[in-house]
Image (cartoon, rainbow, N blue to C red; front, top):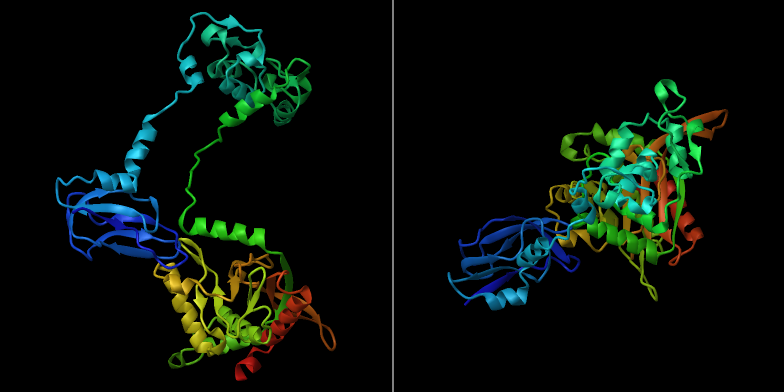
Length: 457
C-alpha cells in the first residue's frame, strides 16, 4: 500500500525547509532509513530519511521549493499502484504550477504593435491615444506624444513611433531632461546648444499636456529599470530574519545608548594571550571573546537586563545564556553560549568558536540557536564606530560592539589619546528604564577597563 514521506519537523522554531537536492528519482527503489533528499532550514542543512520502503512513485516538490514541515514531499509504493487519493490529499504542487503557467494573458499593446498600418497618420486626440509603453518612452525622452505620427492600429502612437521620433531629435542636456520630467514643457526638434543640442532654455511651455492619474499609473506599472535585474526569493534565513526584525520593531519600545570603554588592558591582555604557549590554549582568545566574558560577568549583577519581556510578565534569569550574532553564507544566525556566566575565559572562547564554525558550515542544531537571554553583535572588525542593534525579542537587551578608536582624555599634565572600544546598547524600555541601562553600561565599561582584575575574581 502506498505511503507518503513527510517533511520532518526540526525543532520547535522551524516552520519550513528548502529542498536542496533529491538523492532519489521517481522509479527508484527506497529502503526505510535511506536518505531521500537534502534540505535546508533557516538554521542548518539536514538529510531527510525515507520512513517507508518501496518504489518512489512521485516527488511532490522540486529543488528550491520551500516546503512546510509535516507536509508530504514524496509517495512510495509498488509500481502501477493507484495513488490518486494520496495526490488529492497532498495537493500535487507541480500539476497546479503547470496549470497556472499555461494560462497566459497577452498584453494588448504587444498585440497591437504587431499590426502595422502602411500609412502614418497624424494624431491629434491627445496622449490618451498613445499606448502606455509609448507614453512611458515619451516621458523618458522628453517628447510630446501628441506631436508624433502614429503607426499603430487606427493611427495610435506606439513605442516604436516614439523611438523613431527620438532618433530624429537632437539630444537633451541634463538640465533639460530634469525640467521635462517635472514641468509641463515640451522639447523642440533642435535647440540652441552645440550641434543643435536642446538646452533648458529651449523648452517650450504650455504645449505639453499633464498626464491624468490613470495615465501616470499605466506608465508606473510599465517602467523598466536599466541594466539587468535579479529577482531573489525571500526565504530561509533571510525570511526568518526579516520576520523577526519586523516583529521586534513592531512590538518593543527600543532605545539605544552609546558609550565607550578604555581598551588599554583589553589590548594588552589580548597581546599576552596571543604570545603565550600554545599548550595553554589561550593564544586563540580574541578581543570579541574578552568582551563576551566581560558581558557575561556583568549581567550577573544586572538581572533586569538579562531578561525576557512577555507583555504581562518579565522573566529575569539567574544564569546568562549569551546569544552571539554570526555572519554566515546563509545569512545572520545567533548561536547561544549556554551558562556563559559559569565559564572560564578559555572555555568560553572555545565554545564560541565551535558554535560559530557550526553556523558557518551549516551544521548548527536548532537547539544551539535558541534559548538566549541576552545577545551580542560585533561590527567592530568592519570599522563601524556606532550603530543601532535590533532586539532579539523577547530578550530585553542587545549589545553592539564597535571598533577601537583613540579618544582624547585629560591626563594629569596633558591630553592623552587612549584607545577606547565603542559599545551600543539597545534595550526594551517596556522592561526597564534608561537609568538601569546606563548603570549596566557603566559597570560593563569598568569591567572591560579592568578586564585583568575581572578575570581574577
